[in-house]
Length: 75
Image (tube, rainbow, N blue to C red; front, side, top):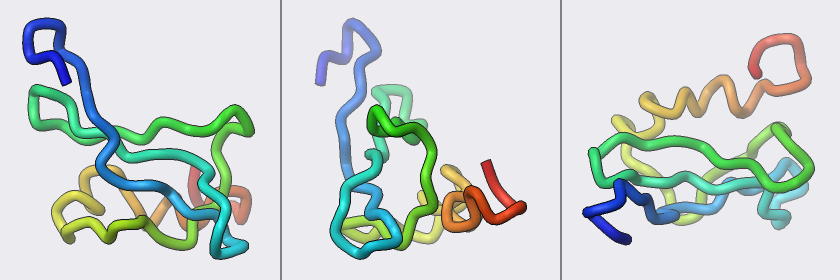
């Protein structure tokens, strides 16, 4: 991570509903903000993060909506 350039670092994998595919990543930026970056397949429903995130981090990335992508409720 390069603080001078405002870069981020992946802190967790987003695991797809099959329980093993990585469909994206959660990044923490040098500003302290968290953001989701998707795999080339684009937004997909998420089962969990590995490692698990704190409640505050999940709220920031709207984890609940990530679990509902493609089901009429998220994304």
